[in-house]
Amino acid sequence: MQIDTEALKQLVDEAVVPFVVQHHGTEGGSAFRRIAAALRKIYEQFDPFETGGSIVLLHGVASLESPESTELADITDVTKLKQAGFVLELTPSGKFRRWTEQPDLAEVSRHAVVYEFAEGVERIYAGGDSKEIPALFPGGGSIFAAPTFSELYEALIYYRNRLVRTSRCRILKDCWSDAGRLFFKAKPEKTMRRSLDQFLFSALRGNVEVKPEQNVDETHPIDIKVTFHQLGRVALIEIKWLGKSRKDDGSSASEHWDQRARDGAKQLADYLDANHEYTGGQTARGYLVVVDGRRRGLDGDLGGLQAPDLMHYVDQEIAYDPKYHELRTDFEVPLRMFAEPKQ
Amino acid sequence: MIAGDIGPYAWFDALALAAHLRQAQNDFLREELQLLGYLACLLSLYDGRPTADWRYQFASTPSGAPFSPSLDAAFARLVEEGHLQQSAELECSITEAGADELSELRALRMLTSREPYLEAASSSCLVVTPGMIRRAISQDPDIRAAFDMNSRRLLLDDKGLSFAYESLGVFQSALGNASVDLLAPALVWVTYFCQQSELDVS
Image (cartoon, rainbow over all chains, first blue to last red; front, side):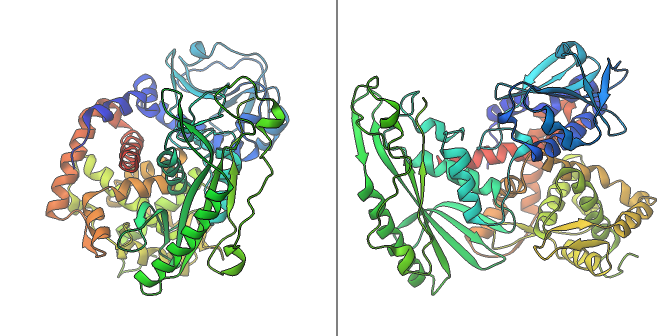
């Protein structure tokens, strides 16, 4: 296996720890660790996307002179401050001091490592310079708030509510042909599979292997296979999408409606049977994920749709017939994940 | 007390990883200790230490993960002796007795020289999830081969070691002076191999 030196160089250029170390040495690295640990605790209290202002957390190196500040009694007090945003200094003794004035972050970073979350972007300041923190976790949001799950179904519910609904996932964003999230690009299924694969392997804990496109018999690949080695269990995940897709030139590519989800359910049931036979009785459970981008009255004109049309399908579940999830014990309730348009 | 048949190194590593993980996440799972132990071992190679210095070996399992019987045995004994605790949900953490034991062991230089690698591996969990570390490690050619053939094989043996040195050398060149903090190569290494796996799926 050859290392792609160009890709590696770009990663190093974007990486935060080398940047902090370059400016503040190993003391900067220690400050970064303390900031990261504190942020994980802070973001257990609230999602940074909920805040109205910016969030700043800094840790001094060398001789930081702190301005007027008040000490927080407990880290949970940050929830009271989240609406307006805040500037907190983490002291060497582990106390949190709230600065009353918004400082010049670049200037402060000459004597501190400074973290900022503002308008959905995370930055690190050090030595008077700053760098955007790359989004390592596919789910977007803070890299210090990546969720982890022991249960697959819980992870899928999170994926539906937090990543698909607003297309917050950095990979899933690329499925859309237009900024308003009305049409998918042609053949979006590969991107959807990549999104869910990346999310699941990042988020699932334990001795779990997540593999895309694994054969259930000689010829048929399931979109994602999750193997829980410790438990001797396997999950087969089939992904379908509903809505309309367009080619790069704007012409129509394909469209899928409710029947596509029903076909997906039949396909998954067949895959479960094939897998059972092919593996000599392996215990598997089927999960149907339906990414729903349906919009009422959508044609080539993007301008004419009103809010009721855009959200018409938000609560419109698919009528499955047969209902495999009721007929079979190895078939989980299908998960329709409505992807909202950008309004 | 260090259990004789397990050896002091795996015993110390399990305790030190557990202690440092307390900063990064609230708890850990038994198999996460294996992942981070292996990552720490790679970091020691990265830092120019010979593989024999690690004093215990890892094998690749058919599930595509590294596994050290010594580290696992140390974990089990530490739980038995109350230095680590494991909940009904299998979430683990270090106890006060474990922290005391670790403090005593830190007086031994042969053990504390390992701690920077264990610390950097554990601290990587401040930024990346255990799942991401697992995915990155699973890109290792030896581990991939074991997974594909549904077999076990020793990791970092002659062939695996030559690949490890070669690839880690490329990382050393790219990172330069930033390697003074081992968290830098740990995170760049995990991110690089996760990114490569994403390209495989594309």
